[in-house]
Image 1 (cartoon, rainbow, N blue to C red):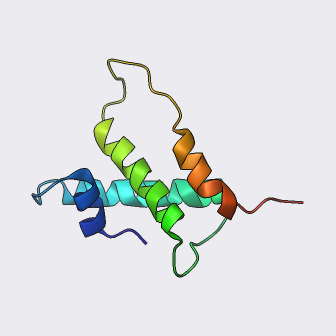
Image 2: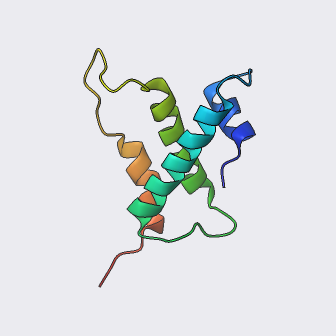
Image 3: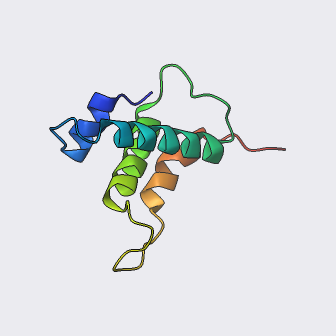
Length: 91
């Protein structure tokens, strides 16, 4: 699981003003990773690539908090490449 401290270090945030918002972003990014991986819970310990993918998603959510941006947003293939080896595929 990604901690608030890990996320703030990744985001380079050194204040507590946005802790609730960042915690919500961690929860959303974790849920999105679980959905992508087709899992109900993360393995323990969480593999480093999965942690990195969740942090990438948190960073994206933090940087693009507005509904519409000035520029088009594109899918992050690094996110998928980090998660694909751990993805549970249905047969």
